[in-house]
Length: 496
Image (cartoon, rainbow, N blue to C red; front, side, top):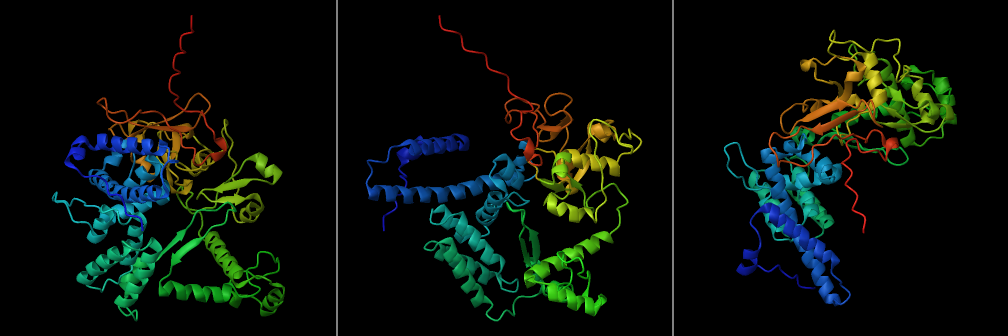
């Protein structure tokens, strides 16, 4: 095995490196740029392998440095200075790493970082042996995530000393195993700690329960990730026995009975079962869909103007006329036109007319603070989701934001309202780290909501404070014109 080339630690080299973290990060960036540009054709195979191992060790040590920086940002709430609501939002949107990578880095930092308590004391890492291994460059973030996942599954009844020993063992084996190998070792460790499953109790089951609806793929299909408690599993099995029985709730059979099998005519069910060629998984899917349609049809219309519990769809007239394209629901789901017709049978149609008013009042002035149902429908048709830059929140999770704010005299008029999730709605203000908002009156994005970080009261803090437009919910508008383009540089002088 090739020996890893350790980084020199001579006092002379250490003296050349700056102590300022910004300057040191710039040096690391310059090293990466120069290393990437170096010609490698003259290097031997052994030198290339040694360089690869040394780079991997450095990358893992940078994981420790990254955790330290993220802990400091989290402790100080420094992400608010950049206009973000959380560390996750800053990583995902500010550094543009995406939700998945942001979660991974947050989990790793929580495991190996040294946080500060309310008394100002620096705490030891939650996983001290793992933190040491990362600092040595022996393991990386992927190993940390596997160790954290195993520790999360240790029953609450296991004493703290045993849990600490388990973490140390996992960190030790991680130094010689891949992340997948750590997962396998963790499964064996869990089996050793609770061989017959008797230590797992209701506290563990409540802690581990969950259901996540994953994003739609290119075929507009979605995956459910769930861990069911015994009670929910029992209820689900009872429902599926009836609603997913052969012949029941078949969307491809107009004569198929809907609802529970016990309430249907046995002869009709038997005849539908003869025609039913669905798989058991397909019947389960259709049964759940039928149950949700029934629940939605009996939920009634909310008293407020909120659209959170209603099925509201937006689509262009051209797509509807051509029977092609993708519609968008208020919850952010994309629905093909072929399925929209089926959904529309249980929905109330609404019409949004732009540049003109509808028959319903859309201009309420100062007579009412909360947006009406008609205004919410218009906001959905225009904004489709939160208008804050980079925010993926669908319209169902937004509020009607005033321009200017209600407390500053803003009217509840459709051209003075915009969709904003609750978190971003509360960040609008005049203090540094908050946001300013406007609706463009001119330009290619007339009528659309723009945001920008509130300019600092002192110079030299933060980057340019420019108006930004959220295009996440309007992919069809890309590429888009910069809402606040920089000035055009002067042309160079012509040669004599």
